[in-house]
Length: 282
Length: 161
Image (tube, rainbow over all chains, first blue to last red; front, side, top):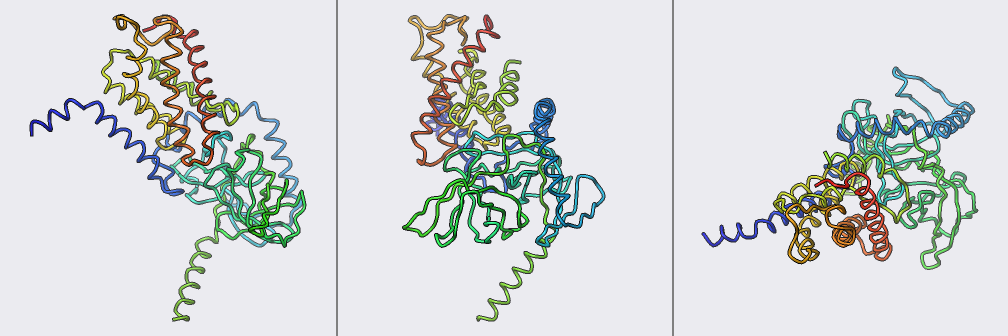
């Protein structure tokens, strides 16, 4: 008994180190992908307010860019045939896109962003109080941005498209052939990889790629980017396509979080359909 | 005090400096390096862990900085011994250029910064995918952090303990 106590006393430092180091590793590895981007993230109030203040100061330097982007988007939207029913607050707009989907846009500002790390996150100044929840998609005037992974009352953390774990279902605008958008190959904030497109598809440089709407995260038809280059992979009968992203990740100021109104109804429908299929095949 | 300065500097200005994917300085480790030599090493360990965790909150890195800082604090006593001048340190010695000279500083800080960056960047990638690019990142960022630390010390911490 005394031997053990003496052991602990002598190696106190090393044991403390092992405990702390193990806790750190536990924090890193027990983060479950998107629910809980770790317990320590920038959606907490202190980090959020530091970033709010800082970005308030620096946003003046980007005013011209932000304004240009918004003006372009306004012009584009005015030309679309759509029903715009504005609901109560200016921050929360009900939209209908040309594919007939209905969803809400929750407007928020980016208070922290990065593009040069292997895994990039954005922090937004809107949180659960504004209706944002984990798993919602985030888009900007110039294209898709990412997926919300962590929410606090007033702030949210978005897993950027520029993140090793982000996967987005997308399709060619004109043909509808769908594949997966991922990032991490070249670690360049301007490009992403588009995979699972069979070589039977006629691909041209400059082809437009938009979201496919297959997941309940992004509405169909949100701009992703254009084909920058493509190489065939004969062994797989797929192309390896590099997409030039339309979103300007270095100049993100306004981000709209998409809360899909029909999501609960659609998911329930899919679950019920699966259930009745299982019963039929029994 | 000094810790607040390093942390704020790190999360506001340095975080948003986009020097590319290879140059990723983490100046805040300077705060830990400049802790008094005679401070109880377990206390240094706890302080390092807490500082790393605070930076993790801002960087969304989940605990990687905490892991790296703890490892760095663990190795600090050993590194101090390795670089100790003959006859051990003076009673009033502290981790600054003013007190110990620039050559000592480069060795001491360089080694500990290297340890920190090795843990941090490899944990971030967590695969052997970019083994050499990550190594390059460790070296280049480490040099950047070291240079920034030397400059910061020359400007702000000339004579402090």
